[in-house]
Image (cartoon, rainbow, N blue to C red):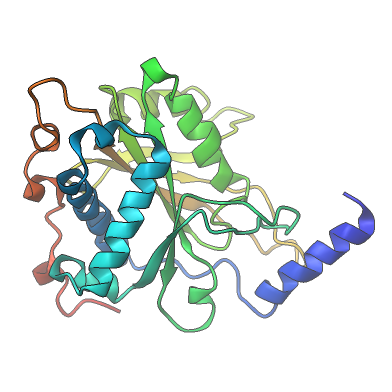
Length: 275
């Protein structure tokens, strides 16, 4: 990149970040659970509504279906999304973002949640990066990490925030325990570790295969003092069953009844605790 072009891009980035304390304060733990529960609920809505064969479709169709379902149900004041509606304006797909230096102006994470809140909270979306896991189709956990986790570590995605989500559409029998954890263990604690893993995925939530991992971020924000550290990012992994139904089997049979796709966190548990 030419020197003058680099200066221009830093100036453009400064228009967004000047006066903003980075990183943004972390989400309340209960809010993370509300978002995770909402994603599971919406996934089951998609499973219920899509033609069975489409459950095996490409990532783009599934992402679009999820976003459409979220936004429609938010606009309809769907009771199961009542708590999500207090946190989120809407969901968007493939919205152009910039990386932490501003030298990439057109990075496009899969799903972006525009969050409610004053100040800088609404300036930086919460990212949900989606990947298909299907070893026979060469959609491996390596790809999930190289084109998912690493984008957060490198500051391409979610660089102003301290948390993010990854949603896996699992087409084979892969689980976080038998695929993701062993893969990250191969480089964990070693130098270099290209995924900068501080904490291996630990099970959390229920109603789906879920875990949280934590990763350091070696970059520093431009135009900030050297001690301004983005700190680690916590990634919530949600792996859902997206295997196309076999002959004689319905998608409902694969994923179970709607209530089985939801976590036990509900409106009653959160009543009076929203901040």
